Length: 355
Ligand SMILES: [Zn+2]
Image (cartoon, rainbow, N blue to C red; front, side, top):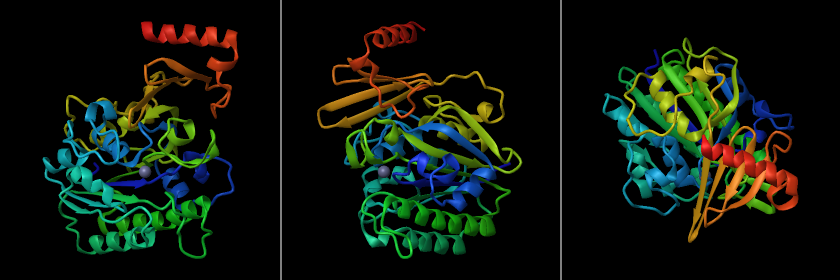
């Protein structure tokens, strides 16, 4: 049974820039080996492409409209328990070592011990500095007590400031962060043991790289911001080499961790445990994803199924629709261009609402 929990988040990491997610010429051997040791989720979507609220969805299993954090500067109280608070109530020691001081706006989500300082571009928050903090923590950790550690790496986020010999590009940042993830896993396994741990690796959101009219950055609802990696390892409970192709959601990560680690499930978690999908028992489960984006007075929403993506504007009016089967990159807007397709999408949407 899993005892210790390690959660790793890599900021701004697109799924299709991890080697085991695609055919791109990018080297991520540590993430690839980790995926092979557990389960890879091939179609995993973030709730919101902004760092503070996205991590809040990850750690509460709820959408931003429910947990109440919809932008980076928000300091209002959270309305849901976090993984740290749930685990601490069961006797875990909880620690966060992150690469961005903005998490202090939410008191680092209730972790008992936390390093969370500085800006996204500071060299003190580069992966080679963050990993030193983690390794110092590992040296003194009490392995006799259940430990929850959250490590956040900012590196793929701008600016591109990775060390030599990595090129200072998005690809260079991803290949660099893969090396520090490898160091983290080696150190963790040596000190706390792979066999007695549940380990999750994911991202908070993706990144624009000259797609959908955006040169670089995030915060939108486009698929390049929503599609992120999700990998779990839990020896004895998750078969190595497992692969889940069905649509899964960021809000499902918390209930899945609680399920595998036998921690109590708050009644008001919105997400679902993915354990049945991992074990092949829920193959017909068709989850519906909701994405949210809030910026000032702008409030837009997406609904994604395996077949369609619907974008709703400020007035909750439909503004874009895509056929995800024939157009997985969501380039051909059916709502704007094709009357017959629009009729078909309208019908699908109506069906969806009636169910
Ligand atoms: Zn982020």
